[in-house]
Image (tube, rainbow, N blue to C red; front, side, top):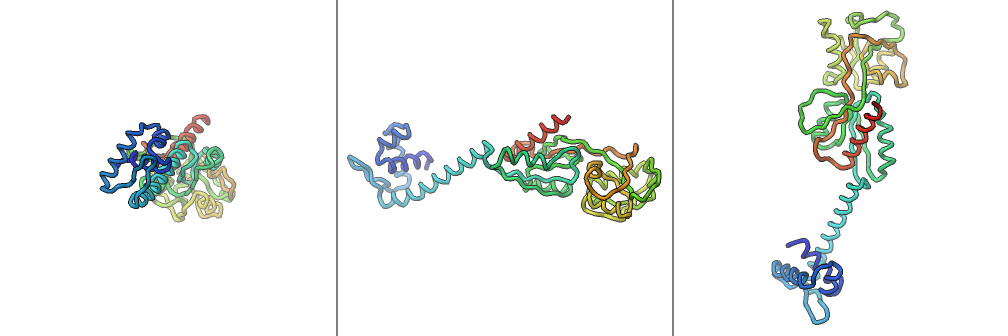
Length: 292
């Protein structure tokens, strides 16, 4: 059974004959007639009763045509949806992001994309980089914006889109002169969980001192780290963009011996992926290029 046979049968019945169906489809009438006969032979039933002036559906033909009409309708809708994705009239971009985005204004990027492509749905979730990337590998996210870290996954496309840097923050009431990490080596620290990039950076900052950071307060977001430091619970390393945002006052130290903060990258599937997601990634990358 071929799709063209179903199309020909539907057209013959709708147009009231083989000749008119051929004119509509721009197919020679004998070719249409031959294909309908092949379909009847394959099914083993007569679908059309031919007369000198018209064609009439048999009982089997009426039942079969109901299914044919439904199937062709589904195909038309499938084509329309595919065209909608191609033209960006339809789609869904599922974005995951860490709270750290450097000088990338992700909210503005999302708002601009939605304005340009109102038919495309956008969804956003935040979290740590590793779990978000795992979700993307499982197919539940299309794009992840997160600090760069080593990955040997050949199926991921990774493009830097923003810069970031680390700073040390201490409580505002702490008026010590802090010039290097050695000055805070004995401090209590506030940080993200063990599997976070910030925790690895904190360990790297202590490594040259031959020491291990005393992380006695562990929280889930950079904003809550800042709140705990402001309340006097300890010191912390934070991305400069977090400190630049509105929030409780802390003392900020730009130290020369801090590790370099990884670039903020956009992660996506190397090949394929929804057209809308590919467009979103391209616009993020092009926007980062224009920012320099």
